[in-house]
Image 1 (cartoon, rainbow, N blue to C red):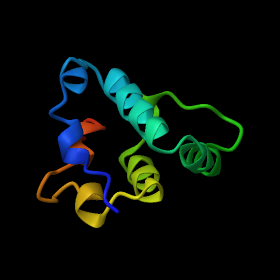
Image 2 (image 1 turned 135 degrees about the horizontal axis):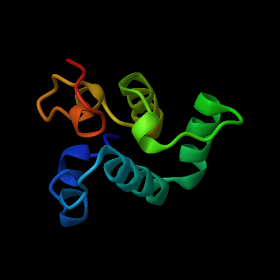
Image 3 (image 1 turned 180 degrees about the horizontal axis):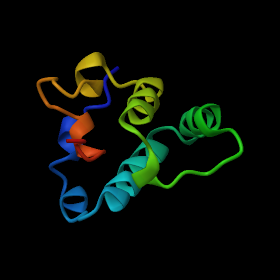
Length: 93
């Protein structure tokens, strides 16, 4: 079942996030609201004993988190119809 991430980018709470850090916290909070145990498992599997700030999570890591949480291929793909991944990480030139 897709997460419907496209709708998240339009929410007023997300729109006021001015940095990758605040966007990351917003997305992590929403994922936590959906399924805290599943998010905890995903984060533990990725980071073991270290804690990572949202702005330090790479595009590949965001995709892994979103996939584990149930995001469909279109939601995880940068080139997808809604282009979800670009909302979470800066583009590297």
